[in-house]
Length: 462
Ligand code: F0G
Image (cartoon, rainbow, N blue to C red):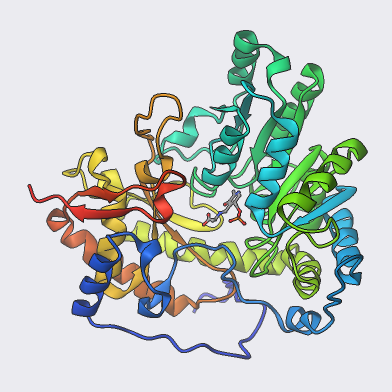
């Protein structure tokens, strides 16, 4: 026995369980055909292990559930709002908080306030809802992430970094006055859960100050980003996750948050900022789209659970186990020679569908087909993150063909055990063995917005 090894373990024990149901392969084949080969259209009860997303499907703690009983469901001025606002300021540094029903509610308000028709919003890779709200408000999204982020094989430790030369080129082309803000995400979802470094963010802050441009932070996965900074960036090994998160947020002017991820709640979000005028405008708009500025679409009890969730999400042992589980699954797959995005990200493993299904051209949606095949094998539900998610160019109507054609295995927080991860890895191994049998897909129904959620497909016969 190697006595020097000290494994991590989950910093909690399980107090309540929810039974899982296994279906037969014939049932799964029928279910995925009925769902138009779109895992979003499956019924949850037909899923065995659900790795569709890490959004809103995490397990709350006993303290969060206890907080739910403290819900002050007053229409105006709920005690839970003030607790949440004070927690946001203490942990994330932002002075003003406007609650929203979830992240995209905050993105809508932000985009409407800051964007004018014909503006350009640079970002470290797009996110589906974020880009759509920018476009609906009249902006053009510009990807300024470093090139390495588009290469699944690159081991760059901070693939979420912004290439400042790309920002300079944009200013030279359109002028800084056409750029209302730079939008940066911590732990970039579409790049594979890849972090931005503190050094890059500091340089970006200086760039924004020089050009008089705001810096807005999509902080949905800020705790996972802080963990990678602690592990990988010089000078941060002895700083706590809480300190690193505070520093990250302090470098930015405003934030949108989907609390359904790192903040460990099932629903909720907020828009936060330091500027009083911006806050006033956000209060004016939140009453139109979400609810009064002291609840913004959230129940009092949900704001209480969020306040507690934020304090739990910054604990070093929590985040170590959280990312540790993702790494456990990723390393298992690597040992089986499954091509995945490197380095292993914070919230998910991303399979490189191009490499697994080289016989399927990208316009036959290999990642969508692989996601469907994985469900059929063992009832594991995952999601496409490739050409279907990327959608169409808003001006030309052409399909985007992103370099990354990925399948995302997303791990909900505090929900599954290592044994579930073993089952998932075995299933992927089996699907890899019969990859040649998987056929491409074609649309039978394509919704106008965020098509990946509700699109339907049929296998291509040739
Ligand atoms: N920003 C990022 C980086 C996200 O990952 C999401 C949601 C949002 C904003 C929008 O927040 O869902 O609360 O409205 N991502 C989910 C996912 C849906 O599965 O990746 P929301």
